[in-house]
Length: 221
Image 1 (cartoon, one colour):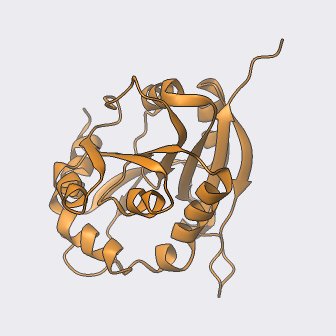
Image 2: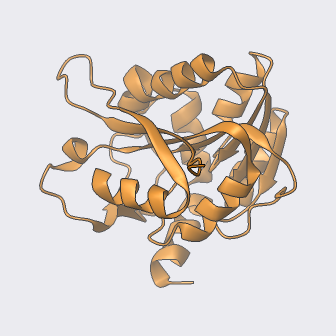
Image 3: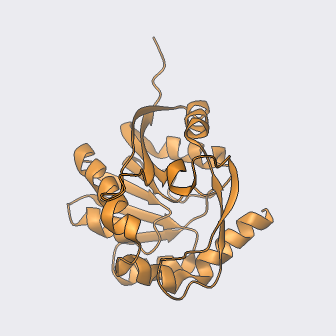
């Protein structure tokens, strides 16, 4: 495990209470105005029976889709966040990128909502591929390049959680990919991108995220 990975995991563990408060009290403007509704709208359009949330945090998305009758499972690398998710009910487990539990189960939709933060993602891509139903969809929502600076090259950045509310004491390193890098990552792991959405801020009209809707790449016969 690299020092970046160790710092990332420790950040989520240290900031678990602050993150829970930020999400449950809707203190993050981009999520409140745009990105939460964007991912929920796409899930509603797909109408899955089962859903896996990889990097579920304190569990908001699983609770939201469960209210629509979807069987939802959440996985996160922070035991503290999983404890907070479990306290409100639902099926949640501790799991890291390379050790996703329940690989024997299959899901109609797998969601990675601002949660694929590592540099090396091929292993988790292969695991998710094996857990997706044949007609299922992988949804990846990630930070749009225009939201952090159009000239940003691929590499490690640091999130200081400014504007997210009080209590964040541990900055988090995370790996930024441009859109072409996501396309290449998905293609080499057997996924085909069906659509790419770019949810925008209602006032500035600047894209806040890129939402990639992917399916298993079907071999030609």
